[in-house]
Structure formats: structure tokens, C-alpha cells
Length: 317
Image (tube, rainbow, N blue to C red; front, side, top):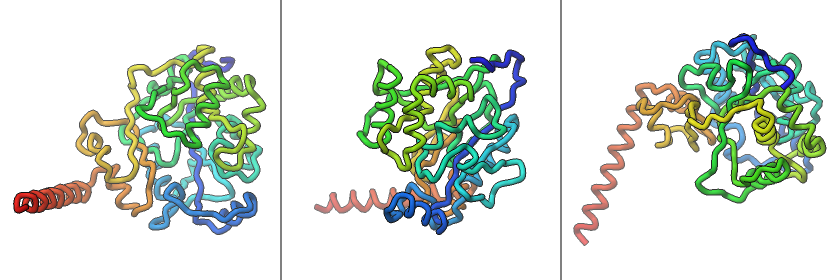
């Protein structure tokens, strides 16, 4: 990589977070007019039960608290501005990186390196990633500036749009393991790595930029493509020991958050994939407030009562 810095821990690191408010009528109009179809809300979109920036507000709060070495946070949007943004968090519109109206992460990911003012080394976050304890630079980058990345092989593979895109990327970039995936964690990247990966298949990257929605023809996963290329050209190393510990949860108050709540093998990062409840419950599930433990006790007591009732019914019969 041309721009590897050799000085120990001196290079700046930024964060990029994409965000969209799908309750915004102007955004909905752009969606429907561009795609010529009605917008259908699902659990994957912004919650209706609380403010649309509830997830982002917690994400930003924990970056400020647990990642103080981050230089700038760039929030990538489409003609929107979250209310939770502070003066230290820089708003970037899709048009600033040469994009039109797109409604698909695979369309803006190929152009992340084009963000004006972005540092050579950066982390790509989702707004549902939460840094729940202190994170250090060396979880993501070596002292020499190489990225530290993780791969995983899923225990089962669901054949959906996302996995088809992953397989298409693996084939295109000559991977011998077509079940390889990248976990749902913050991604360590450099601008030089992305440019190098794009040069190997420029048409696929441009096709991805033009993919208005997930699954459009020619779409690839450009982060995965960058990781494969970076390993091959030795600008990245693999975190085979899983030093960066993460937990993936489908929703707040998920039993998979047990380790986090009770500080057993605590993760660095938590992703809560589906959120359509109150901001308070989201914050409780991450910040371990007393109300969370009260709720847990109540749930356990209710479960015990249900089990007892079922046992009595079976005993009588």
C-alpha cells in the first residue's frame, strides 16, 4: 500500500456511519419516484415508535466515550441531518461522493474512499453498532498501518440476496472458499486498499454504485472484495484469535446479550440488528441500567410460573 505510515500510532483514524430516516416524507417520495414503486415499511427501516436517530444517537455516544482516539466521524446521508449530530460529527451527502438517489448500502460502499477529508485509515460502522467498552486502535490497525480483519464461516447459510452477493464477490475475486463471510462488525479499511481492489474489477464496482436496491444485476460486496485483495497484497492481516469480540443480537432484550449484561466474556462491540421499540429499552439493553435487571427478573419469574402451570396440567392428565 502506497500510503502506509511507519510512525508508531501517529496516523489519524476516522469513522464513517451511513444513516437514513425512512419516516421522512421527502425521502419516501424520492424512493417511490426513483424506483417507481410504493415504499413498504419493514423492521429493517427506521423505527416508528421512537425518534429515527435513536440508534445513531447511542452509536455516536459510545464512540465518543469508548473510542476517544477517533479523529472525525462522518455521517453519510441522503439530504438528511440527524438531530443527535454534534459539531464534531461531519455530515456528508451522497452527492458529495458522486452518487445519485440510491437506496442500498452496496451502492455507496464502493465510494466510501471518496469522502472529502476522510483519513487514509478509517472504520466503517453501521448505526446499529455499539462500542460497549474501551476499544484500542490496535484492534483494527497495526502500528505500521495494516488493517486487522476477521473472516468467518457461518454455521448455516440462508440463500438470500445478501449471500448471493457475497458468493458473487468471492467468485469474482478468486476466493477458494465460497462460504467465507465477514462478520457484522466495524470494518477497518484504507482508501488505498479500496482503490486497489476496485482496479481489479472496475466494472463490478461501477455496477454496484448503480445498484439502486439490493440484488440489482452486477452488485458485489466491495468491503469483502477489499478484504480479499488486502490479504493477498499483504496490506492486511487476519485476526485469527478474534481479539475483537463482538455480539450479534436480533433485538434489544435478547438472551444473546447475556454475556454483556453480566460481564461474562464481555464483547467490545454489539450489533442489534432489528430495532422497533423505545429508545429507553435500547439504551437499557446496552448500558445495563437497573430497570434492565428488574425486567430480566420479571421475565424469569413469569417463565417459572408458566413452566409450573404446564407441569401441573400434565400431572393432572
